Amino acid sequence: MNRREEIAESLREVEERVAAACRAAGRERSEVELLAVTKTFPASDAALLADLGLTAFAENREQEARGKVGEFDALRPAAGVRWHMVGQLQRNKARSVVRWADVVESVDSERLVAALGKATSNALAAGERSAPLEVLIQVGLDESPGRGGCPPEQVQSLAEVISRTSDLRLRGVMAVAPLGGDPVVSFDTLSAISERLRRDHPEAGDVSAGMSGDLESAVAHGSTRVRVGTALLGGRRLISP
Image 1: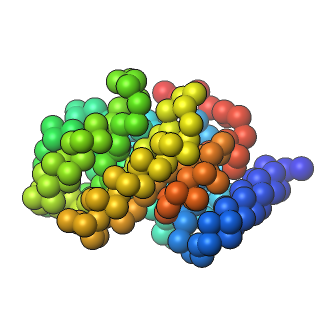
Image 2 (image 1 turned 90 degrees about the horizontal axis):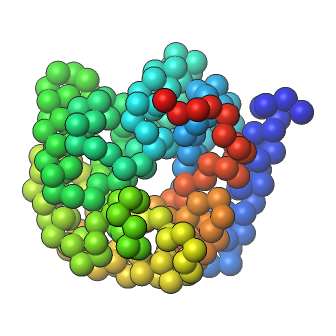
């Protein structure tokens, strides 16, 4: 089996899982976006996924993503895909990330909001991007500082800061289920936070939650975007820079 056939088979299996999860939750399949997490995999794998119909891809390290997006664009210049940044982002990487990312899902502090807002405005003025930056608030659902995330009680205030920042567009929330925890509890918590957020920010309806191991639970609790890497692409193929 060549790489294209391998990826096609994995995609078919993931699509079946997502469709089954939607049916079980009484939802339409169109309500849940499949985001392919291509971290540590080559641009050629992303190109194969694009050939198979995927249009949304995610990276978690800015340095790796920067080169990969350029390679992908050279391989598939007319693909029209969107790139998401889903990993923790340092403020000093804001200028670089806004040059390739359509969406940053890991916004968790006012200082990062300020850095991204400034970088996006400058990039628009310089012709380095053509649209505002869409952002999601990463909600911290555990006590591990190394995983990032805004404390749940600060989500509303951070949303207000984003909404006042030129050239940023708040689209919703993102979270990672805590290691060793019950994903049902985590996704239920995130769902409640999302519901509160939408009362004041109805445009912020995205809920990015669920990965290869827990996407069914996330879909059952309202996720609108599942981030899948391992189930699509297998074990790591590259060493991240």
